[in-house]
Length: 135
Image 1 (cartoon, rainbow, N blue to C red):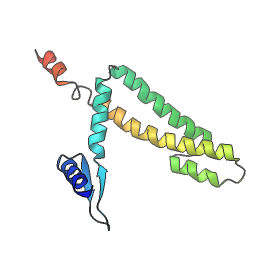
Image 2 (cartoon, rainbow, N blue to C red):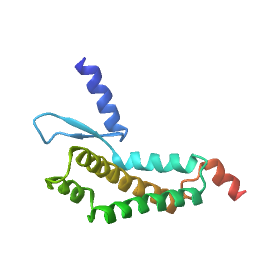
Image 3 (cartoon, helix red, strand yellow):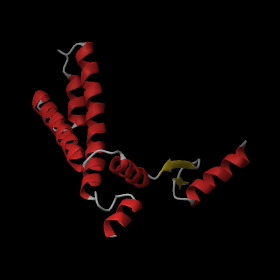
């Protein structure tokens, strides 16, 4: 029902998990993307991977994007989507390019998060690890 749902949403806003937008005709809620990125960086740090493994993963993602840039002669996912206007493309190639554009955007977000996790590796260490290091 409306009231219990509103109370839960208000609590999530108060806790900083959601943001409220009352600028439109209806109130909408959206997640705190910074918080999500920080949590993902902490998950990466706690995953058991080494900083070297994450660095390799970062390099692989960047290489994949450079490969797409070279293959299609574009510099962004939206530029790749713009190539769909080429009438010589068949349906399978259009679908492939749409999927690559989506994956490209995903990799761009992952690069930011993995890069942050690498830069802040020591800061993101679990508190027990930090305590052991200082002992």
